[in-house]
Image (cartoon, rainbow, N blue to C red; front, side, top):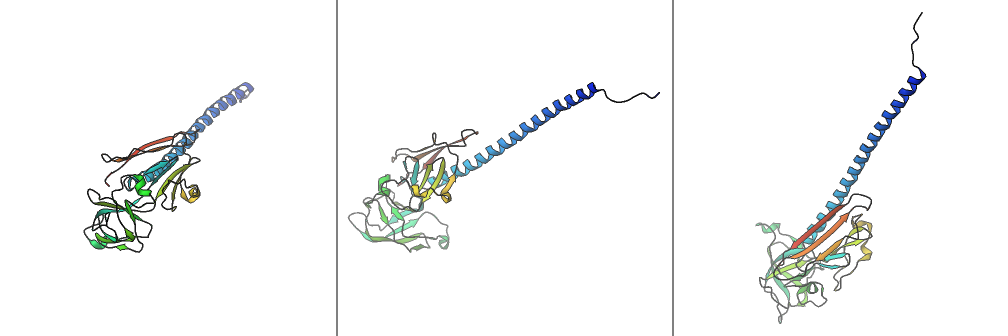
Length: 266
C-alpha cells in the first residue's frame, strides 16, 4: 500500500501562525525604516530652508551702513551700503554746496570696470554715529543725492539735491552711500524681506509687505525669535544678534544663533 503524504490540520495552523508572526515583524521593520527616511527627509528640508534664510539675513545685515541697524518688535531694519569711500571738497557747516568729491574704495586697477549709478533715492552719510542721524528728517549727517549720475572711475563729483551741508567731519573722512532701507520681519511664523517703503524717521512695521513674493522662510518659532542690536559706541563693532528656531512644534527643530559684526567706522 502507498503511504499517504500531506499535512495535518495542526501542522498547517502552526505554519500559518509562524508566517503571520514573521510577516508582522517584517512589516514593522519596513514601517520603522520608512518613518526614519521620512523624518530624515523632513529634517534635511528644514535644515536647508533655515540655512538659506539665516545666511541671506546674515550677509545682507553685514553689508549695512554702520549704525543703521535698528529693531522694533519683530522687525529688523537697516540701510544697505551701496558704495563706501572717502571724501574731500565737501560742504561742512557753515559752508554749503550742490556737489562733493567722493573717492570709492571698491573697484579694480582698471577704472573702466568701476561702474555704479544713482537712482535718486540714495543718501550719502558722513559721521552718522547713531541711527537717528541715518533716518532723521533733518539732514545733519547726510545729504540727498540727485538721480542720473553714473560712475566710471574711482574719483566722482557727486550731485547733491539742492544746497547741502554736513554738520561734522569724519575723523578719517569716510563716507557711505546708502540705498533705501530694508526690513526683515517676523509675522505669524514667517520671515519676510520688505523693501520699497522709503526713508522714515520712526521705524515702520511694514505690514503691507507681508506678501508671498517677499517670503523668505516659514515655520519659525515666534516665542524664541530674537533680533537685537548692541548699543552703538565708537570703541567696538556694532553687534547684531539673530536668534531663530525653525520647525513646527511637533517636529525636530533647528536652532540658529548668529552674531553679525558690522565695522563701526563712521
